Amino acid sequence: QVQLVESGGGLVQAGGSLTLSCAASGSDFGIATMGWHRQAPGKQRELVATITRNGYTSYTDSVKGRFTISRVNAKNMVYLQMNSLKPEDTAVYYCHANVKTFWREYDSWGQGTQVTVSS
Image (tube, rainbow, N blue to C red; front, side, top):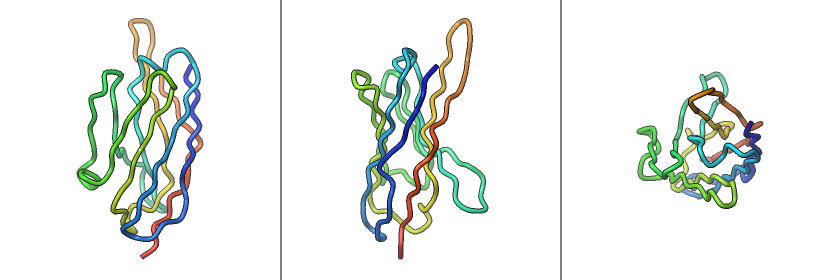
């Protein structure tokens, strides 16, 4: 299975930038659809961005034009570049992997990294 470890969270002022990193281990990374989700206090976890194994990306409307998801398969890494951050981006950000093959499907989650945007 894929194991995930996030890093790069922190405190930033509104308008600033942060880059989150997700280090993956396991032989399935290359076929996984990777994603970033976030959960703000008192709110449900929401999908922020996804990237397929072929590099196709999608974003939730609230981050389009500000966030960029990318992956380097050779390094088993996924990134989320976040620009023009807003206080409403404050949340715990989770890296997620979905692996689907002919024989099985499973999801893996990281432990999360806190992003706090001050106004």
